[in-house]
Amino acid sequence: MRKVLMGILVVGVLALAWGLLVVGAQDEEPTVEWTCPEGFAGQSLNIYNWATYIDEAAIPRFEELCGVSVTYSVFGSNEEMITRLRQGNPGFDIVVPAGGSIPVMADSELLMALDHSKLPNMTNLAERFIDPVYDPGNTYTIAYQWGTIGLAYRKSAVDGEVTGWEDVFAYDGNVAWLDDSRAMMGVGLLLLGLDPNTENLEEIQAARDFLIENGQNVVRIAADDGQEMLARGEADIIVEYNGDVFQIIYDCECEDYAFVTPAEGTNYWVDNLAIPAGAPNPDLAHAFIDYMLDPVVSAANSNYIAYASPNQVAIDLGLIDAELLSNPFIYPTAEDQEKMFFILENPEIEQAYRDAWGEVSILIGE
Image (cartoon, rainbow, N blue to C red; front, side, top):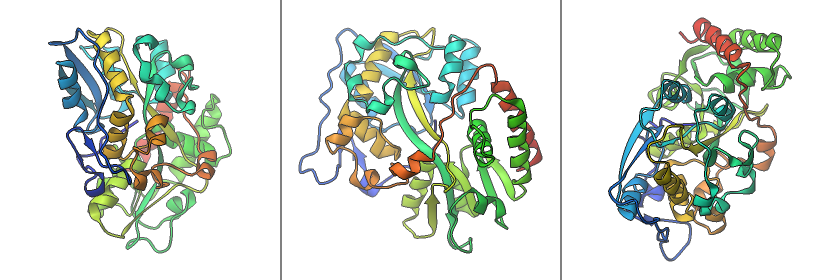
């Protein structure tokens, strides 16, 4: 879902150069063997994605392989992207929506059905990303990256360890929450023993009240830049996407930051590649999606931005950086995954969630 990564990119062991990938203990550097279908030379592709949410070599390589030009535009939130498409597609060929929003987007006819015959590399996906609950049959989407929301804190500021949501709520200091309405409302529902995807208005309102009651230490509801607040010392504990926090840990090269998966459970998300309705060049968009599914390209992408890959072949071939693959920040343990919930939006109830979160946002963190 994510991610405005604020330009902080993993370096050192994660460094990538044009067409090259440093991977684990391999003796030889893998090369991209994907071949672009013929007939695209001179054409253009317009991508609408989160900022810095792609390997910096991926687009130039695609441009050279296909003889095309690519324009990369960015959005600051999933809601911003959807709102722009509702106003009429201004010319985007690829968008990167959160999995939970696909039912709403499909219901609003904002997405174009995919032609799987043009996506031979689709077979590289891990089984859990084939026929996902949010998009049966992968009608509209192909998984791009996945991850979780967790808790990060500065050890030098916090007395003791932070292990879960109760520690965050009880903390006597500055806390920043993430401006992700359904994820945070889902946490409130989870901690009340309710379904994070409930359609019961009273339960949604109960979660709203619970968050307001437990958010008195919140200094800001951060628009996906909580990691910067943590780094600047503006908050001691933050709720943030796992990859964003992992990057500041590597950038710091210090021992002062910790990241934990909340003991009570948390949200996991899947971001996807999709073709919006009205795309000017859907054929080239299919080619780009298939290119990103190439195991070498996919691994380079995940290694560079430090989010988990849905590409099973890339994992099986040992192309994912071993330090990332073994890190529970990025690839959560099976035990942690059992406690996670996935948000599945329902067009008929989303306004109730938005209204409830709006009340939370007004009353805390302002």
